[in-house]
Amino acid sequence: MNAGPRPTEHEVAVAAHKLVAAYSWQSVDPDRLVAQVREQLAAGAGLAEPYGLERLCERAAAEQLYAACGLPPTTPAAARRREQAYQDVGQYLLAVGPRQLPPPPPDVDWQAVVQDTLQELYLTLVRRQDTRGFLALALVILRRQSAGRWKARKSQSAHEQSLDLTADDPSGAGPAISDVSIEGTRDPYRSVDPQGDREVLLILGRCLQTVEQRTIGLGLYLGLKRREILLVFQDLAGNYDNLRRAVEQRLARCSRVRRLRDPAAPWVPCPVRGCPDPAGGAF
Image (cartoon, rainbow, N blue to C red; front, side, top):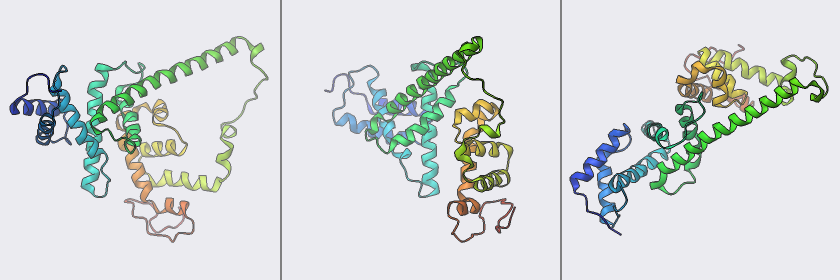
């Protein structure tokens, strides 16, 4: 079970600190990492495989990251630690993904794939119990996300080719389609409550503070995904996640949104900073 020479305490410390520095991790404690690895070695963990000590360190780090990512945000400190842990996992994926995995499509950068991976990882976390395999799981999801971009690209290309063929051969195009306005192409289910739609759009237009926030808010209201919003507004890519976080935080506290969800609820003066209508009068 325990093949290979036993590393010294100094060698374990060097390997642990080197790993933390390599990925610029902020939520992984290198001293605790050393203690974890020493416990595994004492329990008979083997080092026969190549880079055995480095792999032990990485698995121990995965335990710390798993625990931090699973923290309930019951306090500001816990919320910051959890957010930092996800950023650390993102750093790892951005470093390892391009080295070990096939690249995403040319017009998709790794940062976008990593962000989608972190979102899926968050949803997966509650069902995952193998803490030492946490980083390996993240890589598996990253591979699937990258492959999914290629699959979507191929489907889009095939659809565009079919449209080109139809345009070249009008005989197979079916009945002619009359010109319609944009309003006529809206999802009919979105017109069931036009007053509610108007209220939401007013909230997005007047409660959100910047054009960028309103763009993200409108995209989310229309059910668009991150990549779909960025296909149109590519200049938001570098700040998308911060903008979305700001939008969600403002709307989560907005008294008008609260009243939309529960019309019978009493009005509470809006706590959102810079609210144009904190007293609840008409816009």
